[in-house]
Image (cartoon, rainbow, N blue to C red):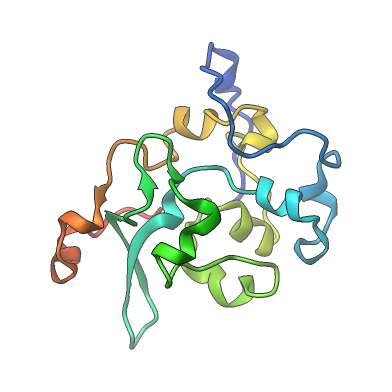
Length: 172
């Protein structure tokens, strides 16, 4: 999926919530010029749009490797902010949490959300106009309806054998 022509939806008043990712002082348009493997750690982190989709539990068919996203979110996902409540120490609570790096993206990109900046750039595609690096506002991902804000269920409320009942039918 390539980026659509800029809709400029953020010209309307948009709330300016505090972005937990410091995007100030980064190289201009680094995502267009710097290969993923050559990005500075702050640039790598700034690629996250804050959608929360990567924190949805996924079911993978062992025969076809097809990945199905569910509405069942990791126990650490804050459904309102779409951020990990314990990001810096998440592996202590969720040992199976994947830490995405330039070194492992080739093995992981296939199950990342289709709109994920890491996946888009890995596939040679442009960021969407609602991405905070493009819009300058961390709320545009939510305004564009591209986040999981308000529609997930926490994994501790749903037994794993019932996750199939929460599969999202549309691509994510």
